[in-house]
Amino acid sequence: MFHNLQSLLSGSIKRGGIGQQMEEALILEKYKEIAGEILGPEEADKIRPMYVRNKILTVASLSAEITDKLQTREEIIIGEIKKRLDSEGLNKIKYIT
Image (cartoon, rainbow, N blue to C red):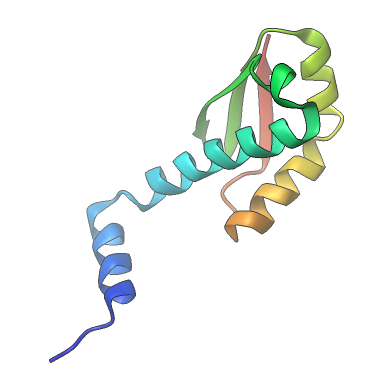
């Protein structure tokens, strides 16, 4: 008897309760990638996505200027994360400066 590996893994992830944690980790990774594309590597090193709770991504920033650049592009960043991950796990970004 053969089973589709993807369906077995999906079921195991859901039963284990780690699906949401995996999605949140992927959101952090994609945010860093997209912010790097917007800012460039030097400025991107001054921000760090911290965690996702209740569909809100919290990002620490060492520069108010960088925070302003990213806040003006918040809708674009969220849309791009949703598109790249095919996910609805993010609605807002909060910055800590």
